[in-house]
Each structure stands twice: as C-alpha cells, then as structure tokens.
Image 1 (cartoon, rainbow, N blue to C red):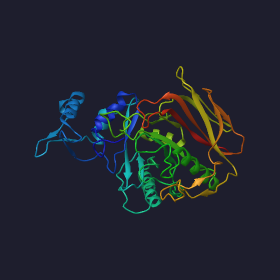
Image 2 (tube, rainbow, N blue to C red):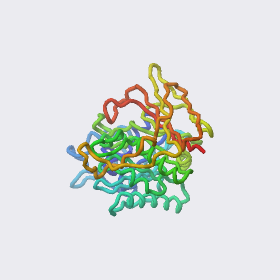
Image 3 (cartoon, rainbow, N blue to C red):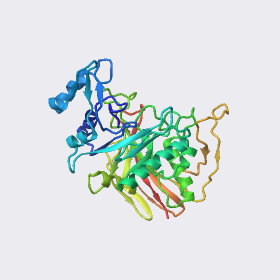
Image 4 (cartoon, rainbow, N blue to C red):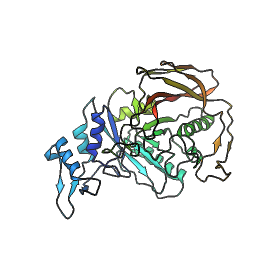
Length: 387
C-alpha cells in the first residue's frame, strides 16, 4: 500500500484508516524507495493531490492537534512518520502497522517488496532485470541477518510495464515469495498475449517446476495484494484498496510472528473467497471453504508431475516475430489441473508422482470493484511439496 510519502493520493493515516475501518488486522506500508522517517511536508493545493477538503477530513477524523500546517510560500501539511502512525493505530491483538518498502528501479524495471524492514534499502541503478532483483533480495537478506529479525523479499507484479520474464526470475536466489495477484489496473494478472506475458499463475507454476526439479526442497509462495494508491475515487481504472490480501494463521498479531508464519506458508491469498481451515498433510491437501449462499466455488488442484517436459520455445507474436519482453513458452505438462471439483470441502490425495500441488478457488461471485471488469472472487492455497 502507498501513501503521500511516495505516489499514493492520501496521507498515510487516511490510507491506514481505510483498512482499519474495513476489518483488516494488519497492514504494511510499502511506499516506493522511502521509509516514513524524518520531516516531510506535502503541499496543499486545489490542483494537487492533497487538497483543503482532504486536510479538513483529516482534522475531523484525527483531531485539530494531529494536523500540522506550515504557512510559507506554499501551504503544506507534515506527513506522519512510522513512529507516529504506529503509536496511533497499533492496538495489541487487534490492529498492527508494519514497516516495508517497495524497492523500485524506474523505467519499467523490477519492483521488490521488503517486508518488516528496519532500514531503508537504496534502489539500484544497474542494468539487467535479474541483476537488479538479485541485489534487492540480497539486501533484504543481509538486513534480516544484521538485525536478527525475520524479513521477506517479494517479487512484485511480473506483468507490469516491461515485465519480468520467467527466465529472469528463474535465476534469482532466495526467491520464495511471488505476487500472483496484484489489484493495480496496469498489471496483466491474466496475461498479455501481445507482449508475450503468461498469466501470473502460469509464471508461478513454471518457477515451481523448474526450481524443484533442481532442488526438491524448494518452495515458492503466492501472495495477493491490492497495491493501493487511490483512496478517494473508487473505480476499476484506479488502484483502490481492498482488492487482494493474505489471510495468515499466526499465534500473535506481531510483526515477527506474522512474517515467520508467512515464511512457513501458513497463509492463503484471496480476492474475496474465505477459507476456514487448510490441511497440508503428507499424503493430501484439503481445506474448507466458507461458502456464501448461492455461490458456486470451483477448486482446481494444480501440479506438475515428476519427469515433466522442461523444454521451451521462443515467444512469438501472431506474425511470427520475436516478443522482446516475452517469456518463453513452456510445456503444458507444467502446472496441470490434476483435479477439479465444486465441493466446498475439496481434497486431493497425492499419488506420489507429483513434485508439488497447489490449489486455486474460483467463485462465480463478482468481485466488488475489480481491477478488471468481470472478475470474480478467488483464492490461492499454497503449494505442498510431495515427497
């Protein structure tokens, strides 16, 4: 989620308050290339992002003393720091604000979320997608080691702008979190044929299969985020809050505990489907959907079998021309639908021939304010390695 500290259109307290008001338990501020530290004033102007009506609404919600205005050549409001935001919002066992950063190299280059950070990570100006991504992942790992604190590096929206190809992400060491759904309207979650971008689900499956074939203990978890930037006007053309999230099973509502649970895979990703219980066992994957009346839920158990075809072909457009930012085309033996059911307590028993199995739930309930018209509510259950 983003705020006026980078390219969001709302003060951080307004952005956070939306999630508090709508039942979220925790949020992580991931503004681009900045932590909410130090003194920063944002100009107030009727033709700018922060207008007098917004300042008045902040006063009404948070009180007169909360708002600090600087009167100079340009009237401006001071943005609240992470320390101030946590002091105001954090309530033990009820609501939590976490610190993060979307480490961003411009010009269509990759974005990586650093979650539960302590220190700012400088963006890279180097060339090369894989090299930049690796630098960011290494920086998060180094900071976690330095502070003795669990942190996460996540590869964001591979189908945004110039995209990140399957081949570029295959070479990244320490890649364990992958954004399978992003609610920003500029992200082609379902693929972009003209650019040669596969659906993010497909990208995920190829990464799993190719990496597990080399390392049987490798795992890659899929997340859903809203990538919220726009908090005042709600429309599919805007990056609004509430389109995607993760549901985490953790013993405490504390940053380190949540991150450790995420790193264990004790979560699922959702755009609206609710799952009551997930059972990841040695011989089966099963779960219970909190079914709404009149809604049909189709669950696909997706996996890749041992001995799959690892060959690939160059991505070509309809005229046979190479797609410079397209991923190679991989065999349909990767990411097969192993079972499909409309049971609200779906289960899949492993045969022993699978490398891993994950599940995707697609409902027929329309998603409120989707990033793409016609989308329905979904959920993604994390992959299980089959030994």
